[in-house]
Image 1 (cartoon, rainbow, N blue to C red):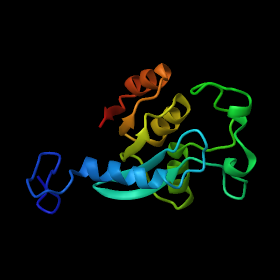
Image 2: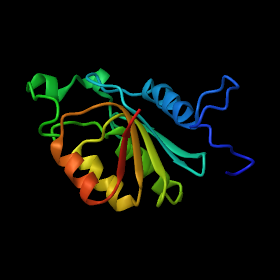
Image 3: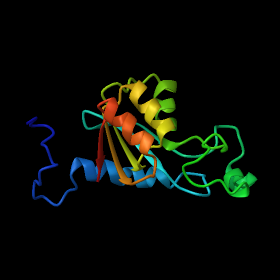
Image 4: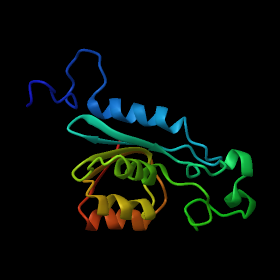
Length: 159
């Protein structure tokens, strides 16, 4: 055990949230910045109990948000989890990896905390970025995502 950062996943009895609870709570605040009309998702990359970067889902920089243009997926009646390419938004997991790359922050070996289980597109990015653990709150019906995480030995933990 590191004396500077005790393992608070095991209750320390001082009323503070565990590290996992702390980082997951931050994902909710990050998600509040989301501009998607269908789902608000927040993600935080963490390494050695330090936040590296955050991301939320929404349109790319300099592009009008769906709140301004309307939701193409709603207009086309695309069910959740299908045809991800028919969306102007970037997923929170994608944005957190992009932001880290943009700012030169290495993410290999990091953990990702996310409000929602990543889809298969995000799973591919997470695997190739070298992220080793993914913590999430809400499930997402994407069996391919689960299969790829298992094959790549990325630990998926629902909190």
